[in-house]
Image (cartoon, rainbow, N blue to C red; front, side, top):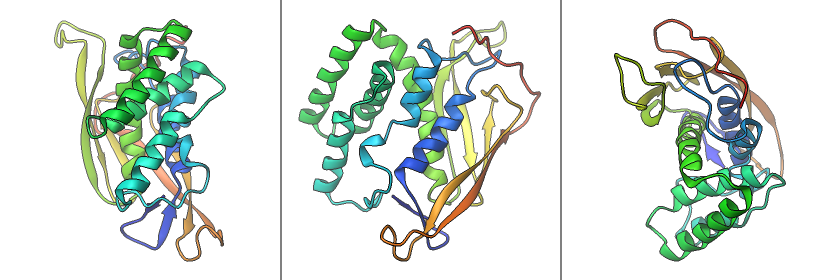
Length: 233
């Protein structure tokens, strides 16, 4: 769970992941292609990337002891999803989180990834391209739940042009403490994205659930709106 840094409320990992999925759902336009995976499976993988935490977790993000943190990562590595491609998207996310900090758990996650790639037939490169988008969606949703100002950038796939011949570029995001997010350049298929995230009063959570909604607004930092991406994937 995430404890807001500006008021006594908490967000569950599930709601954080649902916000990440809302971003993934609208990914893609004439400059930023959709990932090279079946799109519905990709979106499902982003929505469910932290499903190992359950629906109303009590694990304090940023304040867990080492053993508790490892246990949560193990649950992410062991989580099973109905869609094998979505499951592989979630596994790539887990592998990125583990990094080099825990070689044994990283190797365990890697074995699951190798088996999944052989089963689904999609390449590692395709999943790595998709994982950069997952990383961006996850980062924005992660920091949104702390309700504190933040900025970052993730290198994602883009369409090369004569002015910008590279096929990847940094996508910059900023977040203020009131849930307003800007992206530069704009990678989504809609002019802006507005949604609501469920939080709970911190007192008594999770035995006593007092819910509230928190608005999240995501908009371009500047520049023209772009046409939606090709929907054929």
